[in-house]
Image (cartoon, rainbow, N blue to C red; front, top):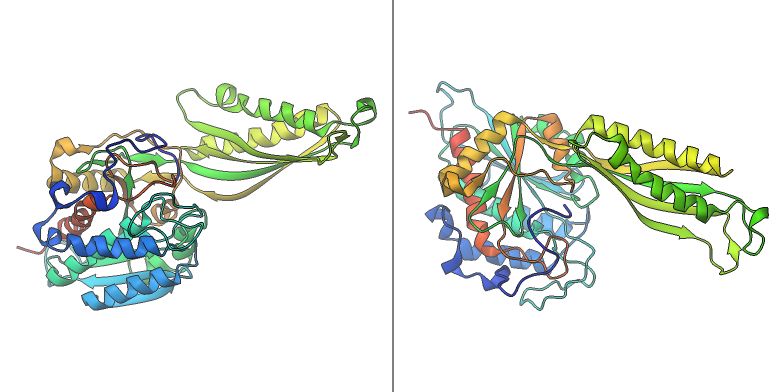
Length: 421
């Protein structure tokens, strides 16, 4: 996950993240049974924070998770799903003879870190140069482990809880890899839920919405092939840099002139490579960027306009333009019934005033979208308080938020899979 609506790019003087949030600041609404081992959850997170791993190379993290799940007494612990994903299964103590058939609900947390150098001097700061948990996946993992410990001990539900620990959310498509590896079918998952912390949203608060909550993302590489030449003789060349400049400007017309003003899209050119000398017009320019949308229709229209502009603007100057679209995530779209259910469970913990049921969607992307594409479900935001922004080198997950997040997972299972009578 990347940029969001709730916070600025730097922490304020009142930054309450990480070890600076003690028990007195813990979010209201968490279950007493989970509060009782909140310090243990914090210790798990600190261990994970100190040992960040990227994408699918989360072998230590996955082993840590699997070891905890086994120690808690989960009925099954399966590793290697989607390459390095881990799944824990906890079965409730219900008989299955109630009005509702036995059901299976999936809860998902992401495990990977980011290629960012941590600058904050924490006692548990990253021990790996150039890598850090700058998006809170250490906290997400700790919260789901906390829920696993509680559920395995109490089992006060009628059905099955599937605890999904996913690798490679940060651009690697680990959600898709787990789905393609048979996650839903193998564990019989009927519905699936995800959660992400959000800096700037107060501790003890949740935010959710039905429908699109996060954008699709597509990476693109644009190539302009002109004709190189001496900078003093431009009439004998086709200036690929000039063409690229016109292409960049024209691309900005897509959102303003081709997309319905009531819809959302982003087109950003973020890198440009051309030439090596001060007096040579380069033959080729390469540009890279990203496009975002909140609907499949807008996504398709934006892609089509990018291709048309690159090819036709280039042709107008006598150059040749090409577009290559790379890795992408679909729109993260909450199913209405499941979003309402998740919001109700959250309100049961913190009160209706602590839940925003119509939060504005974000133009960041999430590969939980692949799971929501296979099963009904919902994705919710958890307040991380006044901390640095996600993907900032001073970011840290707030330990005070963990008991509430773990409690939400626990109550979601107990409410969604109630014991008969």
